[in-house]
Image (tube, rainbow, N blue to C red; front, side):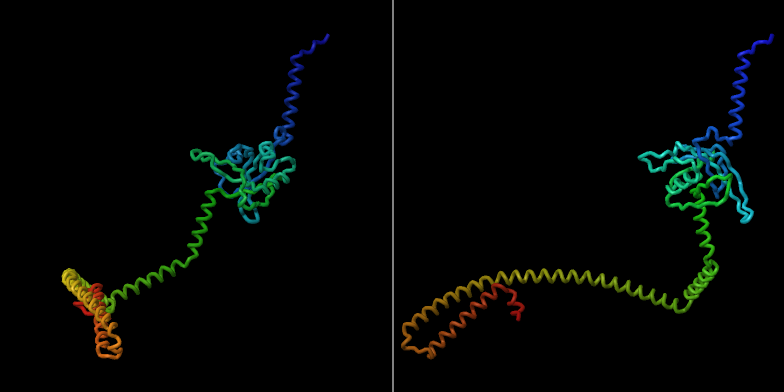
Amino acid sequence: MSKPVSPLAIGSFTIGALLLLVAGLFVFGGGQLFNADRVRYVVFFDSSLNGLDIGAPVKMQGVKIGEVTDIALLLDPKSGKIYKPVVIEIDRESLAGTERSDVPGIKSDKEKVVRDQLVEAGFRARLEIQSLLTGLLYVDFDIYPDKAPVYAGLDYQGLQELPGVPTTTEEIRNIAEEVIGKIRDLPLEQMVTDFSDSLREVKKLLKSADVKESTATLKSTLAGMDQTLKTLNGNLDRLLKDTDRTLNNTNDLVVNVNREIKPLLASMEQAMTTANVALKTTQQSMENFGDAVGPESALNETLHSLQQATRSIRDLSDYLQRHPESLLSGKED
């Protein structure tokens, strides 16, 4: 009579078989059993990979979307150049497109189609520093629309290539090398020689007799100008004082003349008034005796002359009232 089979043994055998099946699928499936939602690419970097380890994160704008799975070195036998392929895995769910997102959705299982969508949107891979203390690097996967895609054009594990861009440090180094190259191309030796020749000519010119004579003449001229300015300063002070004194005297004279001319003008005004009254009386008398005295008579001419003289006295009085200083300087033309 056979022994009954233990349920524990059956369960253990079943679990072991399942574990072997899972392990076989994982090994022979290239590790892709649990990576059905991930897509793998290769990026060729020119800069140093010191600080980049397998398992380093792949981020986009600070969000982890994948990780580094492989790092290697490739030697191109034709050019002798060393390439550094870095394999990255990107989670498709992390880049799933939405209605409000500018990131293209990854809906195709074809890696090339997905790659073309990402590159067309401006995505590039770039090495960045995780921490200044540790010096560890990570792969920054972001949009760089001003960076044209550059491919190495090499086959690595049959993976599609994503274009990479230089790091900030590498760009600075490239710019510095370009500037140094331009400086190196300058004819520095000839420039230094020309500058030395110019200095010698200047030194020779400064030591020449003409320059010494010109310097002495200039010094003498400056000394003469200084003495002239001092003399002019002293004379100008006296001239200003004399001018001020003359203006004060002229002002006093005008005041005195104005004070003296007012009574004279008043007397002349009174005389003209009296003469005018007499003239009117005489004219009235002449009108009464017009028949006896003709227009061409000597008396009529005398009266006419007297009238003109009275008008001249009145004009002179008006002018002296407006210009009393004319008694000293004469009448202006």
